[in-house]
Length: 495
Ligand SMILES: Cc1cc2nc3c(=O)[nH]c(=O)nc-3n(C[C@H](O)[C@H](O)[C@H](O)COP(=O)(O)O)c2cc1C
Image 1 (spheres, rainbow, N blue to C red):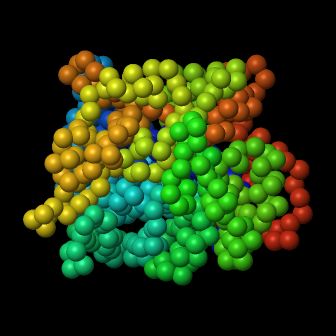
Image 2 (cartoon, helix red, strand yellow):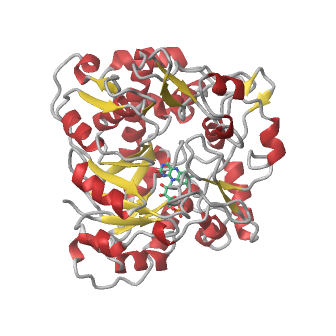
Image 3 (cartoon, rainbow, N blue to C red):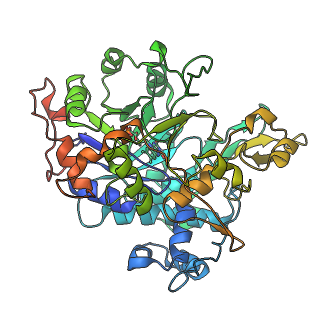
């Protein structure tokens, strides 16, 4: 295995770890990771914003299937951008049998993000997906591989069948992926299918098979992945409950503390002794965004760390500038606060929320939002009484959710993460020229100390400031020096 990175800049969806951030990190010889979530939608909205900077156009020109690129360009590009109060176009609905336009958007959206993140250097770039957001998986992964992605990282589920998909796509072979359908019967057809030849229409040279890193929060899952995955698992990210984004729920029955936050206990702590025994590279995540924590991880036998929150607030991240400024100010003045919301996410996973005025973290703001579900990335598939597959989201209008067999208790406190996450990156939907979707920013508990990356006298910091600081610990001699040695800024981790 080539030299492995000490720092992985964690995937941050949607669009927070954009190509710009991942490129900045990978240029420094560490691993930049783009978020692979909702890239179809993000691409369509960048085009409707007039493609500022011309970056989409540059990537479109390198896409090996120009007729697909031009079709999408013609449909979504608005010269100069849409009027501010106009709504963005909606995309076709995600479904098990992907509509062709959406398939093309998945492939192109993933290609563009990886292509741009790889520009200007020769180091690997990764892409991150949430296993639970299953419908886009196959065409998305293929699109990322067409652009030469070096690593696929996946959490929020048990991605046993992804390594095999990578093996098959490396040879442009058809692949299937089982869709989780609530109430499915044994002989129901649950497989999503993608046949590269139906898209490419011609033979292509083999693609590089990216490394696969599974993001996990338990020893059992690590062992299951190694024993049962249908291809090679190249490493693990072991993520603790202080990490930003979605967190693995605590083991056993959910218990909340007096603030209403999930209580994690002894059983949730991953035994690193057992992880070391698996003889597979691993990185530690969740509160490792500090030089002393990097040193601690290396001492524990990890290859390095995965860091999210510290990178979410640097200049290159996709997070909207007003939210970055407000939350950085809060961190500086000791007023930043992060809440682990056990019900906000329709996925049912705890979701970390930064408290911020005017965002959906405030109850009255949340209550004033019309309950609308029109993006649908977090919908679950279920079997209807007549045996069809339909989709529902616990954040959609309650009566509609109930009419699809959903339970009332699942709807309480649920938030529309899809629309909020688009607002977090400046692609907020405007409804009838009146209601504008508002942000709901996710960060890890490390938000309270992100100001430590600010250079003296500066109000902003860069990805390079983060990487330099994280690698500023005194290097220690290691037993297995070749794989776990810190790679200083500027060195190449060329794969
Ligand atoms: C804004 C934000 C969004 C995130 N989104 C994702 C995601 O889409 N997929 C994922 O696997 N992890 C996600 N994470 C987790 C990060 O990849 C990383 O593991 C985590 O932030 C590490 O912990 P830290 O926040 O304490 O540095 C997100 C984190 C943040 C801060």
